[in-house]
Length: 281
Image 1 (cartoon, rainbow, N blue to C red):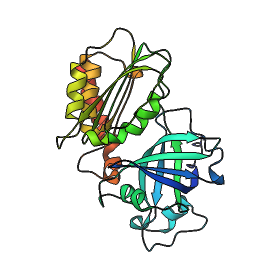
Image 2 (cartoon, one colour):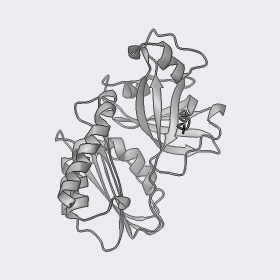
Image 3 (cartoon, rainbow, N blue to C red):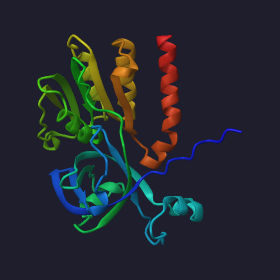
Image 4 (cartoon, rainbow, N blue to C red):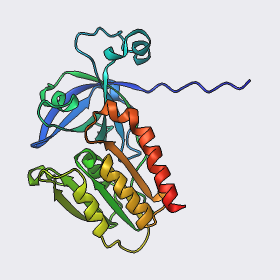
């Protein structure tokens, strides 16, 4: 009788906060370090992500921390909250891991944590995961996203091959949220200011109106699930792009926290794929 392979346990990392920086009014940069991060392993992809663990107040957790033991011994409402964030950069020589957090006051878990955390504090996280990096074989690159995708877009721009054409659309709340993005590529970067509008509407309009350059595109489209769905349909159906030329995913969804979104994301993706298959035949 065949047996299933043992499930690989996520790597648990323990990082120490080295410093923080307010990059824009609503973006906070947290730099983690510490000897335990030596050999962390990020770098292959520009959309590397980690899953940060935020303990519930007043709950005593096993030490050393063991998530499988937590799940086995504690009720679900006492499990740490998990929040997924993109790695902005990883410096293996300095052993420094940089993560950018969107901060909107006291709303949420990770943003307020980033606003108040002090150097010397520790944080637990799993990872890294990831799957995308700009292809050296592409004739040009398309990068599209909102604030949640901005760290990955910034990291990807730094890895665009020298002189390679790129069309970049980033939607943020307003001009004060723009950042200095650098790249060796030949990038046209367009900042779109939401100004209170629905997340992603401006991105959908911009990509639909874009006069695509000739040649094979490698596209990265990430952010709020609603606009990602609309652009996936546009790129797959209207533009005829195969899936292998796309990295496309909803990082978050309006009206859902990460727990709610992650619990429904698989079914949501399945429905999107079914709808797409019906159109494409």
